Image (cartoon, rainbow over all chains, first blue to last red; front, side):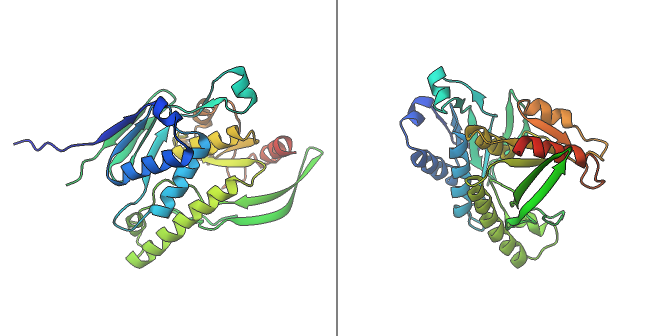
Length: 122
Length: 160
């Protein structure tokens, strides 16, 4: 008999993230990841949002409950219009995967792809 | 400034040295240097137990490590530039490298990558260059003290 275990994955569009504040995005991600979900963000987070996510993750780590997150994104690339770049909005976030540290493991990462392995607990 | 240990998160508090003067090729620069704890996205006390620490010691170290990461992030808000030391034998595409470099780029602050452990046979600074081609890289061996003059020169040029 083959036991099938489920992995819950949420793929969140760029449009949805665009309409959220940084804190709303971070709360949404952490709430999902803490319940064992894998989150894939189409357009990622800004560099500042990434560090705020890490900072908030640190405050929520609890022994035997939550050991943190695995997050993988690509280096930022310059994008946007000329005016965006003038006003410092030229760094575009890129696809990002985030999950519970005890479930998702990065196998390999380079500038073009992120390979991850998801473990399903008992 | 921090001590070296095989156990992760050996540096759990930032250490600061003020008024460090670097002279290189006729240029001089005075810096306040902060050696911050390493950043991480996960901290599991069981990882420390694998290095032989007791459960109590491991839990204490894990708690201090989470506080250290928060302190490192706070310092990111109060820097004029970053000297990012990478292990040139390791994969440079770690999330911490991506996040720190992304933050420096977003804030338009100077960044110099130091490719350490060049004394090891599998050192590959070219992998770091390929990963972050937009940034200057200085290969060194802190263990052997090699290429440090180039590092001092690069610091004076980048942060002067």
